Every structure is written in structure tokens, then in C-alpha cells.
Length: 399
Image (cartoon, rainbow, N blue to C red; front, side):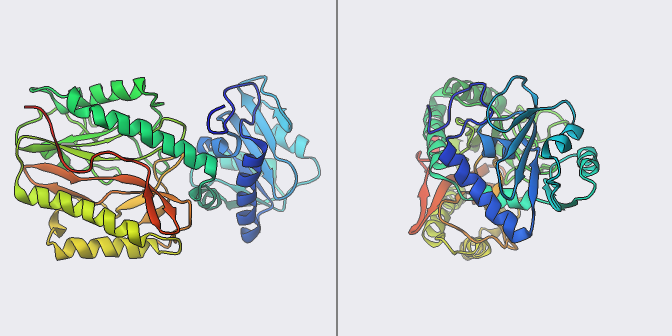
């Protein structure tokens, strides 16, 4: 058993009973606030959260009583509440006469055709959006979740310590990324980079060398990059890593099913003083927000605190991009890389103890590249505690 999660068996629920009860209890409290009588969960991330595994089918969670697991694949899963189905219309037969007045579906992520089909299965039920409920429930982590995230941070930090030894003169950014990917996978990285939201794509992470850090991307990430092909326009583009430039590494931290998010900056040769100043400012912002980000703190206030520090240092033109600027400096992390809360100027999120957030105040310096760091933290009563521990200063690659 690892961190309280049962290894693969034919049981549909791999979570310990008390852990599952804790998670379901949090979801049900939010359901009660919204007046929702039942949820039908289809999204892989939410299915994993409620059961400890991913399967094809549906989790039916009533406001009271036991959940029902409608399983299509894999076949022969066992456990209380498991019902094998081939089509969603069979769900109504199992639920019987207890048809809920209001059903919550994950309308933000579920395909339109699936929503319409489920609506026809329960024609007497009002369908409402439950995506927000699941996002809010997952935002505050249990002890088991925190242990899994902490382990991902340890494994990811090991990989980052190896990066200077992976570089050799004449490397391109993609060649360095491939070596980092190799070490990551051998260290246990699952490779899965779960991202919530429309049209959000990334393979294994982001390595940005020199001017490519200034290439705008269509994706809502803090940093962009042109990528290797227009079909995935983000990240490394095959450029040679040149003296006098930086390499920003923001690679996959999923080692347990729960992610950490960490960025470190490397340089080949000397870089200008204003780039060094911007990097130190990033570290300073982390220190300041680590003290301010206590339970009850408003995410928008944290954003404005960082913005004021950038403005005072006269680094605004380079902050969170140069040609294109990101509109946030932090986000929740867990099963997906972009969970609640969001540290943005119009965010309504309020921090709670045991939320896990990544802060990433970064800068793009023309003709030099990206600088700054990203760390994953857990919110505690006295502020943020780091879960990604690795050298934060710029590290120099061997010439």
C-alpha cells in the first residue's frame, strides 16, 4: 500500500473507506449548498478523486446513501455498488424509483452529446452544472493527497538536480528536454499531464531556451514557446542553446497521480544584470507571498501584492511574458495541473488550509530568455510551506 491507496486490484474503489468517506462528505456538503440531489460523474479526474482509479463509466453519487459505480470498462471490476452496463440508459433501471429532482453534471468538461443522452435517461430531473462543486471539493487536500503530492515533489526535485549533468555543448532545447524526460520517466514520472479546460494541451512539460521564451502561444500557460509543429504550438522549438541565454525548465511532476509544478532557470554563460535582477525579484515575490498566503487570504490580493512589487522594481514590461502576458501568477495543483484557487486579479477564490498552490512569477527578457522560479506549496496557518525543494538561484550549464 502506498500513501493509503491500494495497488491495482479488481476492486472498483481503491481508496480506504475512511478516505473515500472524507472526500464524499466534502462533495455532499457542497451539493447541499447548491440544492443538488445527485451527481453523475464522468470526468477521469473526478472519478479518480472519488474512487482512486480511472474507469470508463459513471459514478452516481446521491445526496444520501451509497454511491453506484456504473462500469463499462474494464470488465469484471468488483465491489459494493458496482453495476456493469453497456449504455447509460441502463442506469435508470438500477436507480429505480429514486429519481432525483436535480442532477448535477460536469457541464464544463462533458461532451454535449453525453449531456443530452444523460438528460434523456432522467427526463424528470433538472440538470445543473456541477463542475464547480467538484473543483471546490478537490481544492482542499486530505492528508493522503498531501502525502502523494509531497512524494511527487521529492521525485521531481531529484530530476531537477540532474539537469546540469544532462547538458552538453551544442545541444538544442528539444535534445535537452528529451534527456530530462528520460530521467523523469526512469524516476517514476507517469507521463500523464492532466489539464482542465478548453483546448489545453502539453506534452511532458515545457523547456524554453533563449528567444523562444518570447514566442506567444495560444494556450493559457504562464509561458509560451513556438513548439516543434503548428499542431502543438508551445514549448521547445529545436533551437540551439546559445551562450548568454537562459533555459527555463517547467517539466511534468506527476509521479503519484497527484502533481507538483516546479520551474527552475538555467543559463549558458553570463547573462545581463537586469535578467539576474528579474530572477531575484521572482524569488522575492515567492518569499513575500509565502508569508501573506494564510487561510482567509484573498487570491486577488496576493496577485496585486506581487504586481506592486514588480511595478516598484520597474519590471512590468517583462512580467509574465514580454510580447504576450499571462493574466495569473499562480494556481491550484493536484490531480490536474490547473485546479483552484487561481491567483489572478479578478479571482474570487479565498485560501483555505491544505489547499495546494503553485506560484510562478516569471519574466521574459528580450534576447536573453525567461527567468524566475515556480514552486508548489501547501497552505498552512502560518503561510505557505514548500513541497518542491531545489536550488532557486540561476544554475549555470557547463560550457
